[in-house]
Amino acid sequence: MTRVLHAIRTVDARQTGGAEELLLRLSQALTRRGRFDPIILRLRKPNPTADPSKDFDNRAHKVGVKVLPMSKLRWQYRWLSGLPRGLRIRVIHMHGQRANYVVWALRRLFPGTWGRVPLVATVHGWVQDNLARKIVTRLELVTLRDCDHVITVSELQRKTLLDLGFAPDRVTVVRPGIPNLAEGTRGAEERRSARAKWHIPMNAYVVAAIGRLSTEKRFDLYLETCAALAKEIPDTRFLLVGGGKQEANLKALATALGLDDQVIFTGLTDDMPGIYAATDLVMLTSDTEGTPHVLLEAMSLDIPIVATEVGGIPEFVTSGEHGILVPAGDKDALVEATLRVHDDAALASRLVAGGREVAGKFTVERMAEGVEEVYSRVLSGKKNRGQ
Image (cartoon, rainbow, N blue to C red):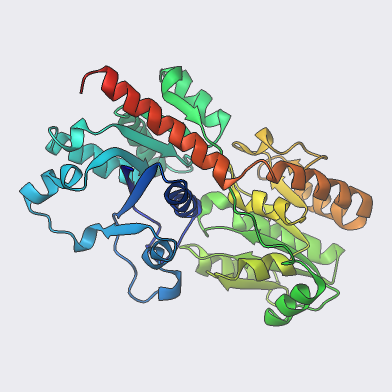
């Protein structure tokens, strides 16, 4: 098998976001398919106080994927220089801005080893809501020009790169894949059990928001929407699922909005089947997105969605057919859309049917096929260049 080194920083090494989940799914699929042998180079130390059951390395090992923690590797010049050769790496695949920076630097420090291996990067998304993040994005674009091929998760991202002068034959859209979620996870018994776990009444209408608690996800807007919905539907409950730096601020905001009795902060959880079993509608309030996995997972489980019309979302969600899309930052539109789904059973059923059809196209196998095609192209290009 052809060995591929995947470099990723991870959010916290005991915390996963979209990029980490995608890499775990992709690595498992590549291993199963048998053409490419993935090894993950993890660039960040874990938080020693975090829950080990959520550890990125443990999860990778469970699915048969080897992880090299950079913190445990020897930093001797000769050893690091020879790492790609010693591991017989044929392709290096970077995931995320900080991984791009590290590999970019290693290719300049060791052009005879790191610099000779074909380089692929996956762009998971760009966040530019402050000056620091704008600078980070500019730096990432520099590293992407060093790549033999760039993978984007949406057509919008690809167009952005082409407008910046990237060659069309070196940028490919590969949609993320979601696993076949187990049947029966949203049956009556699963629903009762999940709601009992989170102390949610069976007659409540549950609106969930799921993701890393960071500023661009606009969970502040979600909570403001929840406050407005609580006045319209008194028996509504709200699940805010995830962890991150904004958790304390969001809890304070929930208290200020009078939502302490209706909003449940689950923190990081590996019980996503239970979350989905308890949920009636999934809301996404982000200012920027690529192709968010949470929407695809919800659609695959017959949960209607309401989301902001940002990033790559309109490429797979037609408003009124697969979900309802609203302008970014528009609280009133989010409230109105949620009330429409709540009040109109026929609309909810139509959205569920349309969403299920869309989600069925985003398979892990299709994602793996697309990535393998990119690897084959860069390896063929290396051979043609005589390297």
